[in-house]
Length: 306
Image (cartoon, one colour):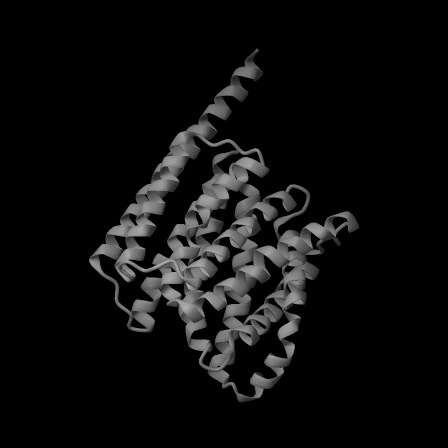
């Protein structure tokens, strides 16, 4: 993996995290007018439409019949079930705290990529991801000291697991398809599964205001379509899946900062310390990826000289 590809993967991952982080306060605002189910369908209808338009302009290929089950699995597990678990988890647990639990997914991704994708990472990468996870735990306890393992926590843990599977499935799909092809067809399948909530959307749409619907449009085009597209790009360009999924630890940090300025929410010095620990873990992971790339380059050079 060359330097430009690595940094393009990191840049795409960071764009995704910024957009996903902005979604949490935006969703909180739009839920004043929509139920979680109606909002989910409305948002992903707009996301699918955006991706289809981009796909037509780019002239993307149609998926092969043998790959349709994989796209359907990605849409069902990685998007539909993730949204279902996270939205229902928010009913039982504070949404902000839930976002921190969901951001534990890089740990799941590292384990899953090792088992199913046969990706081997150095122990330094494990250390970096664990350090970032410790920072996440610090932030969680700064938000809710001593919270119990209840239904809300369980649902958000399931959301973390399903979004982890999304990264694994996308990694497998992008071995044969471009990032935009993988994202578009996965999103279309996810939206089809969400059509069970169409009656709720029809009921609630007339009573919503222009400001709310403009915000839903933002959620559909940017944190859904563009963010999932840039995430697919990052996954496809990364040397190892874990090297980019570690960026997901930053999602609640971004969400907290935006909520601080937009919704007036506050965060403690302990939460700030947790953010610093998360970034420290990401630096360690990045060092591991650099060393891995350097060794691969040195091995290739040595082979060529023989």
